Length: 412
Image 1 (cartoon, helix red, strand yellow):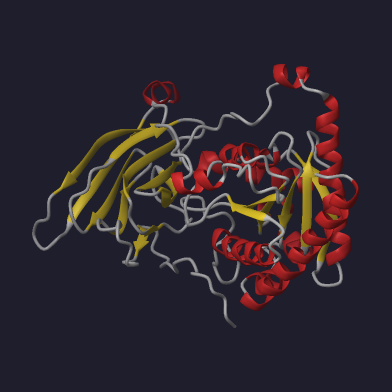
Image 2: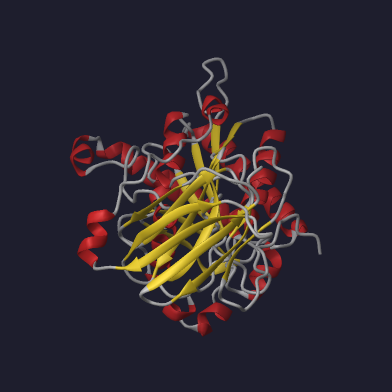
């Protein structure tokens, strides 16, 4: 079976190994984290990253929840989302922006960075980045926690593409591959395939299908394996004056929250629209998972433009918001109706919840869950390149038909 994806790194049961990185030929990824280990207990824990050469880095702590963040030049790192040891609960890493990588360490308890230093190579050992953590109180941790530097915005080339071309009157469709970079998203239960890789490949296929019609301008919110905040994704659609925003995901259910039985029973595609109140508990859980990705990437979890504040919302014309909601719901219903013979849908395929990524003011938007990586049957489909190709074609045809029908009556 062809997947066209890079599976996550398989990693040994030994809990001391946190990071496995590979030389992938990136021109800018010259300083590679080869491996990392942890040792210690619940009072003091040491994190050691072995690097091929000296690198500049910045380590700081963040609250809500307790985290340690390490920023460094672009590297090719993969940190499996596994349990840690001592004060370290888990960790992850990835590209935060072109030229900048980040490691985020989740803490099991509040801890201070007692020491952070880069040791030179010695005794046949490579250079080592050493982070020593010491347990502290909640109050002391909060006093030491720092506001992270501003999240890098999407690259200039991508931003330039978002500028409307006054001479091109074709509708603009923004396609949003969920997750990316340090935010891996869900992980396949059997194959460990990453959600960010599945949806990125799918979105490129979908973009190709729609561009082939020559009827639309297409813009991807990310064009590589890089992190883009939720608000920036919505802002791209608003700034570009998009006619549609389609966000693509392949989530996983938490067996601890919903039970192992749900992993086997809950499967199939689901299309979500924006609403303040979730349509059901499952929709609420999915929205909560998606809305916390900024926190997991070590960036501020605050809603900025284009999320509408209460004060502004009270001034805005309610008619515009109602039109957006109606068009979003109409698109969701249309896509399900036209794809149900080609794609397996969830028993409740149309749902709604308070997704931050869908808060692109004035832009009709849907979030499509292609399936659940927590379900073995769905996972087999999601990792299949042939399946992604077929469903991308089906979705492209449905979107094209929807746009053609709506433009004939009420232009978006």
